[in-house]
Image (cartoon, rainbow, N blue to C red; front, side):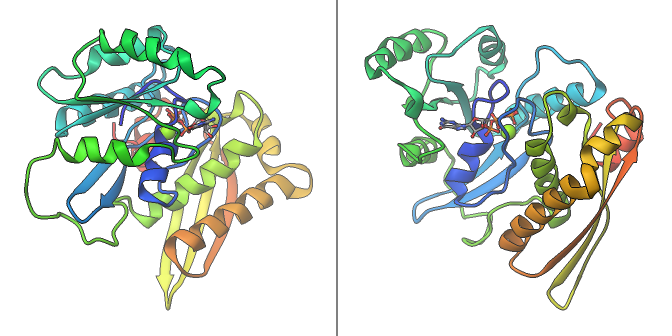
Length: 285
Ligand SMILES: Nc1nc2c(ncn2[C@@H]2O[C@H](COP(=O)(O)OP(=O)(O)OP(=O)(O)O)[C@@H](O)[C@H]2O)c(=O)[nH]1
Ligand SMILES: [Mg+2]
């Protein structure tokens, strides 16, 4: 699953899997790691790989790693799902289109069709896109509402090589609980913060234990400036506490058991540039 930032890749993955495995926010650059989502049907099993939105602007080491994640995913898959927004294909989308490998089948999903006021504009848009390169299928969808997402699965299933399923039917991701915990917490922080701050935030899991069905998670929220600390924590610690509570609830739902989450905010001035910290955060360098 590739596309420019914010087109709805992660929303679509969650819709296909039926659970939140990949975090979503209204801001671009939300996904930083490749996130797998496994869909098992009677006739097929598809392992989707959600990727970070391909960056054409920001240029930190983190951004370069995010872009490399996209390229390596593209080189390793049996089929590519390229996602664009309905009626909004711009230069950033064309950059992604140029990355699509020649030898791999590509399905194009046109997302957010629930937002369309005039449906008749969709047909000329599809025609325009179909000239960019060959596609196995072009499927208009709404990830938010689940419109036609089943057709997407059917189109992709037809492109996969025959073979036994790789995963049990109840498995939904290969991402570790530890990494999922960090991501869910980051999502809640992202959603609470103002415009620029989210990009300078990361969540590191210092400790994750599972004992008699109870998970204890200790997390550090990394910020790049002393002044950001107070913003993340909020007055009386309220914001951090609320984000942690929401994250804990999501974790309990996803992991199926009680979770205790403890959080600290730490200043790490140049974590988006620091190879060791990026590696520790699970962002391969
Ligand atoms: N109206 C509408 N909004 C959608 C739809 N799909 C996603 N969104 C919204 O679009 C925004 C971005 O969604 P994400 O799923 O985080 O997008 P993404 O492509 O994964 O973004 P990055 O990880 O930053 O590349 C969120 O506010 C979603 O709620 C859709 O089908 N309809
Ligand atoms: Mg995403």
